[in-house]
Length: 314
Image 1: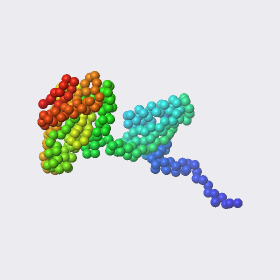
Image 2: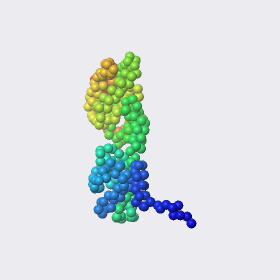
Image 3: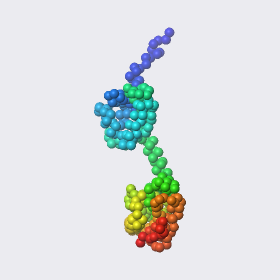
Image 4: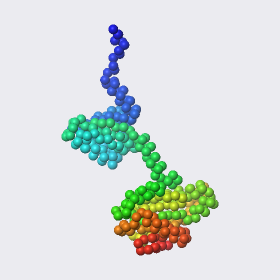
């Protein structure tokens, strides 16, 4: 017969739960529960860590819900109501601002203790997935942005163009497609070298981004060619004026490494028109023809190719 010393007693259940809670907390995971009648929350330490919430503070649901970013708050509330209504578990990712003001993402699971109807409580887990989201966002940005200027690249521009206008342009709200090509860029590059050329492209990208923030999509197609999808203005004459103002802005000199650098810009524009009839490839062809004529006419010109023929904004 073995001595009882050979079979040490198992640790008390509360101690086991404490160890498990600590292990899960180290992995960025916590468990939660909400008694629905009283809206009373119970958290393990992992959830406190995710929210950066002081353990001594009272857990009021309204205060916690306020920490969710607007869209995530709406999605969470819809998911919560669905679980209560159907009894089916749901998982979703949610963005929060912690009690200290940090931005975090967490994977939220919601379950109920009963079937369809009014369960007494809901419960689930919350896991910090901020690093995973940041890694995915970084990979997406690398795939979608021009590495030099940070603008949308050609692939994203074409995809977004279709999203904005629709492939047949029947339901879109774009007003014009504009192609921007820099004047005298090769001369600048040959004279001052590629680092100066890169600095010039970054400066032009920043100016375009500022000029068309909120009214269009700006992209670098490659080399010294940029593209714009304008959502406003609508009137062709106003479009021409806005783009001519952009030409003036782009042609202003800038300084790099103590040197004064200057380029110009030619812009070719295809008007989308109402009703939408032409496909994307046709609009690109029209904008490209207008750009060719703008370049042939000299520096700092804007040419529009529209339903009523070709016109120039001097």
